[in-house]
Amino acid sequence: MKNYLVWYQHYVNAHRHWKFKMLRSGYGWEGEGKFWALNNLIGESDNAILDLNKKAVIASVADELDFTIREFLSFIDYLAKDCELIIFVDDKVTTEIVRSNLKDVMKSREKARANKNKQLGKKSPENKKSYPKLMENFL
Image (cartoon, rainbow, N blue to C red):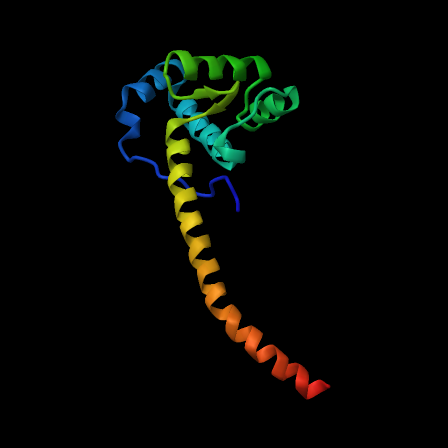
């Protein structure tokens, strides 16, 4: 079962929250756009946690967000300390909204998986009963 997001909920008034006002005061609207792109990358990551412990990952994400490595690390620091928009889990980056969405999605996926297994379980005895008859025709 996948443990990442392909979609997540986003509040329409997020731009009015003090955290985003703080972000825009330091990086303008471009900074907010880059935050949401970073949030998307976090959502695509395993368990919605982006591992920035490898220089290659830092360089890749920095490039994707059109930052130098130094600018990107400064941006991460600003997001964490001043804006409180990202959090660290075991030295890896995530956000509250993405983690919350992943938790909800995983519950739904687990429920769907259980229902599918339940349906497969109901069909299984019928398949087992018909299988020997099918084999009799060929023996």
